[in-house]
Amino acid sequence: MRLGGLALGLAFGIGLLVGVPGDAQVKIPPDFGFEKGKDSPGPVTFSHEKHKEKAEKCTACHTKVFKMKKGTSGTQTMAAMKEGKFCGNCHDGKTELGGKVVFAVEAKDNCEKCHKK
Image (cartoon, rainbow, N blue to C red; front, top):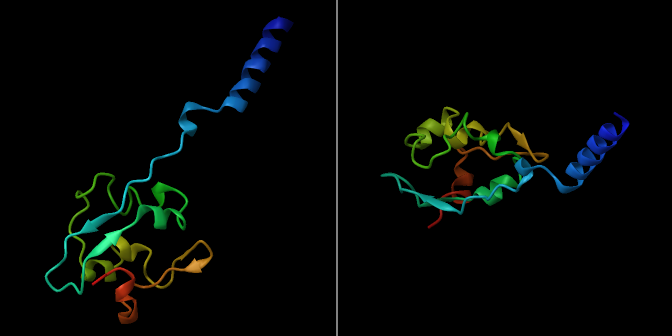
């Protein structure tokens, strides 16, 4: 019995050193562009990498704000974001991530932070 406990303890210790298969790093998706809306001041490119710096887990946005599969969350509009949907869920000028308040999508002086010409 004592040998079985020692073997179990050794196996557990090695497992901690080697890691668990679920511990693998998640591959961050590449940047992608949104279709330019009719009244949009310019195209928007979303960076998962940049947002990962602020929100440590993918679940901060997925699946409560955005679905996992690109193009299945619905059409994003400024009106919807101003209602707190999509990007407006965090970009409301009140939410704090990474020790800083996230800029509001509705502030006119913030347009260029997302819309590039």
